[in-house]
Length: 238
Image: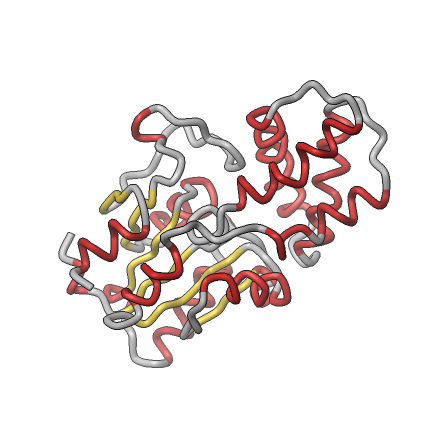
């Protein structure tokens, strides 16, 4: 891939820039221990993956913290636990504690020296503000599910971002979408004809687990793959 051909990079945030699997597990594992749940980290993340997209598609205009509360209730019932309101609320508010990947802040600062940076994210505006503080950069474009009234893999968030970028003079072929999740990002991006770059945070190419993202048996053909955001910045020569 000739990375010099692009003027803007659009990013998935959770799973690509923010280590949501660690954040999710750090909230769910103490709850599981308190309630005698036998499921380990992998089982808890798999339960999250089973329910998050369904709740998002059933509740497209619901803010992400409330979606997470519904997901928590589903997870608790999966493990035979009656969900407590306080625990559901705590999980819904946990996004603010999800850490950034170690390489993300520096890599974003490097990439910002050459590209316009945007995000297309499956959260609400308030949650993203707290995550952006961990990333340490100001993005040129921010599209959240709250803005679009829909959650990825719905096309609406992508179409909103593409429209906004076009309005500031960045054409379709000059945009590269950067993401970890095939389900949330690469499948819809490819359906829209976008060029996309896979950040393989989970090591799926080497047989890693799908974790908090739904499995995609037939992964789309991405245009480039890097193991980390730092590797992408290195390839871009910044």
